[in-house]
Length: 326
Image (tube, rainbow, N blue to C red; front, side, top):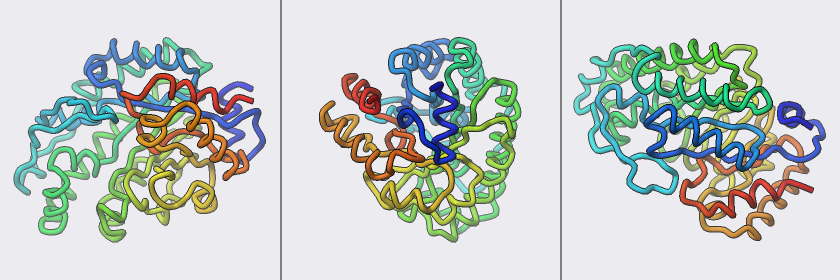
């Protein structure tokens, strides 16, 4: 069974030869140069033969075009540490301008995906990845200042979120030209431990829906990654995507319960730290088989709850891929 057929049948809840499986990860350092990033993604896909390749960009690729300074300092998930936030005062939100998607971090990412899709061809579904406007805002101000401004200067923050949303919409307009399977959309604030439901509904959800509703119909594999503890599943059901991913091994709801709350497929079954980073091939096989059992092998794309650890043993990557066979 080819990859697209396997994924489409999984989303529809139909029987497949095996569950689809994929781990996506950052490539810190390489993701600062389009050629190196593309080569790493292509070699990664060829090494593990994932059912879908999600090309994660440098998380701060848009924010750096506004003056953010960061560096990778060894975090297991490959995320860079911010050393300079461009937003210091609430008035700074009103100074953001719409960016040219063909330049800067967005332009570098577009070039990366162009090289990846050319290098892998039609047999491998490739998805672009985009962080939400609120996620970009948090990178530029820090979580504490973002929340303060949301509650004290909401209109200034709304102005910035409109600009950041327009940046993403312009990026998507260019991404439509590439032979992509879909968009992997990363939401970090639809989490009870970060925002209240009312705050996310007012400052996050409108932009998220505007972006997701702008995706072209030809993209058949769109997913949302709900990061953080206690994700707000009440909003997930209304998002026009085929797949919902969250850290089901680390927070509620469990995988089998999450299946009842959405249509389409769930993505998870593994914990990034406990299993992929610190587990063994034997424990990974057991966890994979448990996830398949919990979901009856239907509507499940096997992965972890977000980006896979970049410093994990390669034997664990291989074990994830091999565990679904047979």
